[in-house]
Each structure stands twice: as structure tokens, then as C-alpha cells.
Length: 248
Image (spheres, one colour):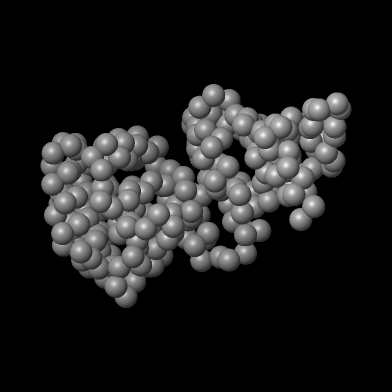
């Protein structure tokens, strides 16, 4: 894979180049840039397969650079020194990121995933979705990317009734009756959807609060009755939290 690094700090470029040479033989580094303007020019001239993109750079962010490009015929792995800035939007779009200082095992995993995705040609829509989430403060217009075996679906959180753990996968139940088996564990969506009125009522269940009809109790057992008729268990450890969420 032909790759470029777009990163404003030279020491970070040097470190990443060293790791790529040592651990990712399939990657051929063909260019580097220190800011977004240089990056845009280089991408248009070189047409890389993969870019390593710093999020925070002088004058323009990595997100600004992508917005200016408009076309995305490459895979992107974001590199950031912050665990918060932009990371939620990246996760929401099922894209990859690395935290500085970059760890070899995480780099290898991200590059391997980029190789697989390059063959499927899915990244353009994911980047479009990322920029929409970054630039749109209205959460009702956000869409979450759900990676499945043969495609990536983009769904509004408001369309999701609930999520159920299926070992290392998650089953999504949608308002239109569809069921989607997604290739990530439920723990990933617990974090992503917590700001969209979802409640982790049980180790295996994540529920959209707007679809909850009532909280039922029989003896010491609690469960949620949803508007679609589903009965979802509530663990004893989470019952107080669930009650607090329901009265908000």
C-alpha cells in the first residue's frame, strides 16, 4: 500500500515512519506533509492508498483537510494526542485512529484493517458521515456507521430500539423491524450511544429510552417493557441507575 503521513510535528513523523518500516512491510511510504495545504497537494499528486492524518494541526485540522478534498479514494487512519478531540465522531463513523505515542501492536492492527477495507471500497461514505457528525451539532441528524459482514449501514440513533450482545457481535433491532448483526461488541456502542438517550440496563442489553413503555417488577426481578412488546431484563446492579434515567 502506498502511504503518506500528514502530521505537523517532525518527531512524530519520524517515529511513525520508523514503526512502519519495522512492523508494516506492506506499507510503502511515498510522502509526508507538515500541514493541511501540503497534504491536499500531495494527495492529489500522488494518489495514495492510505493516509496517516493528524487531527490537530496549525491553521486547518485534519477534518478541515478532508472536507476541502471532497473525494476519498484512500483509507485514512487518524493520529491524535488527545483521547477526546474528534475521537467520538471517528468511532461513530467506524473509522480507525491511533493515540500518540503510537504503539506497534495498534499500528499493525489498524494497517491490517485498512488493507481489508481498501478492497471493499467503503471509506468514502464513512468520511462523509464523519464530517457530518463533526460539523453538525444537532444530534438528531447524526448517523452511526454499523459494520456488517458485507456492508456498512448508516443509521440514525433514533431508529434503533435496542441492542443485544451476541458474543463478540451486537444485534441491532430497528424501528422498521430490521435486525442487523454488527461486527463489534456491545461495549463499543454503550460508549458511543450514551449521549443519545440509551441505557445500559444489563450486561447484554442497551435500550433506547424513547422506546421504553414501562418498568415492570415481579418479586425482586425487574424488566423493561418496550413499545414493540419486547421484555428486557434489568440487572440488580443497574436498577437504581435505570430508575434515575427514566425520571429525567
